[in-house]
Every structure is written in C-alpha cells, then in structure tokens.
Length: 408
Figure 1: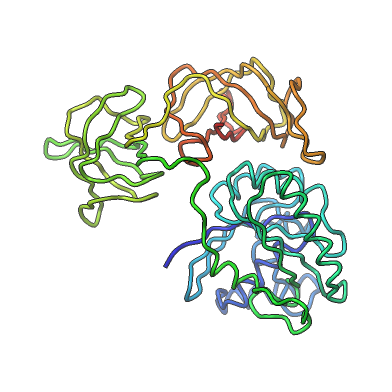
Figure 2: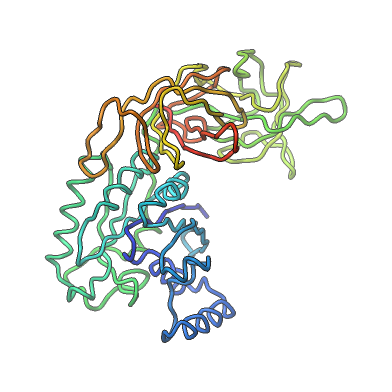
C-alpha cells in the first residue's frame, strides 16, 4: 500500500484541527479510549458531544488558546492508501512550523473560511507550499454550512485562489466545498451540496496520482551515517535519500570525488539488488576508500560540489539575518561553517513581490541569500531532490536551528 503525506494549513480558526479530527473519526482511526477521553475533555470545557479539534491540539497552551502551536502528526489508513497528516499552525508567528510540516509533504490541504475567503495567511501558506516543492494543493473551502451551502461563495473562493496559484506557481489545485464540523464532503458525501459533483476530500486523497519531481532526475544518494567494520569488511550505512541505488552501480564518494562501484547492498532482513528512497541500508564498495560520516555516496548524475550557494531561506529566529552573519550549515549528515555573503531579496507574501537587497530578514521572513561554506557540499537543486537540496541553518553559539534553506 502506498503512502501519501499531506499537510493541513490555513489561518487561525479556519478549522484545520477539526478537519483532521473529522478525518480520523470518520475513517474509524480513533480508538474507544481516545473517544472516551475526548468526550470527557469536551464536557470539562463546557461543550457537548466530541470537540474533534482536540484530537490534534495536545499541548495545554493549544487547548487554552484554541490554536495550534506545534506540528502534530497523525496516521490513518484506508483500503486504498496509508496517510500521514501534518497539522500546521495557522498563526503567522508559527510560520516556521508550517515549513516543518510541508517539508516532507506530497500534498497541501489549504483551508479557507467560506465567509472570509482568502486572507494574508492563505497567501503565506501558498508561497511556502511552492518553495518547499509541494506539487499539488487541495483548496478546502470550509464552513459551507455557515453560508447556506452557497455555490457563489465557493466559486468566489476558488477563483480567487486560482489567481493566487497562478501568481506563485502552484501547478495543480483541486477545490472542494466542505463542512469539517458536520462532516460534509470530508469522508462522506454531503446531501446539502447538490450542485457539487466532484469527489469528497478523502476520495480525492485516495485516488490522487503524484507527479514526479519537477527537476531533472537524480541518481541514488546515500549520505553516510555510520561506518560498520565487521569480518574485515567496511560497510557504509545510511538511508537512500533520493533516486535508486543498485548493486553494480558506478558511484562517486563526495566531496572527495573518488570513484568506485557498489558491491553489495545489505539490510537487517538480507541483501538487496536495489534500494529506493528512504531504505536504510549498508553498502559495501569495491575499493578501500577513506569514507566517513558526512560523505555522500552518489550514482550518476552526481551532485555539484561547491562552497558558494544561493538558496531560498525561511528565517526562524528572533534575531534578524544579515550579510556577514556566521552560521553552521547542516546538509544531510555533513556540518560545515558558513558565512552569509549577501541577502539578495525578501519575498513580500502579501503583494507577491520580491524586494531587492533588504538589510536583513526578520522572523518568519522568506528570502534569497548567498552563502560561502568552509568546506565543499555536494548539493542538488531542491527541485530535483529535497534531501540533498535542503539545508538547516544553525546558530554557532546556542546550537539552535535558526533557518531552513532550499538550494536554487
């Protein structure tokens, strides 16, 4: 059974947590003890029945404020497909958590309130979705019951989002009218929306065919995590993060650039002829090379090794990012020192315009920067490989993650 990862995004009070709770409830993914605890919590808060928003809002501060702060992941399956949901915070202050949620997503479900239409956060989430390479968006027009199931209200939201999608470069959008609170068009088809003939949200997610990455295909990529020495043989362990690695492949060990061949691919369950994305393997090479943690074993076409990078960044820290700042860069399993040589531009997510040469990037800003690293990094464009085209920016002093970057 294949796996679909999707993120749920939208502004505060658009109903993201309720929609996830509805999906889990109506697909029978909640256990009896979870339902009992949910009923007790709902009653304690003065409500009736089940407040499905509480399924994902687990932090005390989230329940007190009625907003999502942290990224909550939930899992469920149907006979057709398995799913991983990432519930992204809606508040602008937690845009960095939206980046976390979307970084591994195949699909973004963006909610809008049928009464309000698109708001500033909708535009911000659309921009983040594009920057992180999410190829398909579902526009869930929620709270249709509060506008008397108006087709005009739905069409207005869909048309406005279509203009936004065209402006930011979203390739595929599917609008669906829903009521998360009542369950209309989430799992079960609504009897109140006779004018809508499309799929329910779950039907669409079950049948959606995912397109291949937009960039040129990459060969197998294995960042080395551990060197295993056993019976006089060295094996290099780690996940295959992109492409497919096969026994007999000619590969290059980067950044050194030494060439060799894959002799065997082993796992806990036995040997493989080939290993696909995110298979955890141990590889034996034909030659006795100096390979360690932080190196990348890559099949053709190989990544570019460079110390000069241009990347789109989402800045997470209270302290602004400016030219001359020194950081640590985490790329796959390699850590390198880096300096910001230039802040190229800042993206205005409201006007959808790039402001050239800003003095700095503030908390939750999106922009383009140039970096120079102390050692070479073997990078692919982010459009071709999320794993080898992404960077984490880390504060040298506090060791806190202060930014996420996508190599252009």
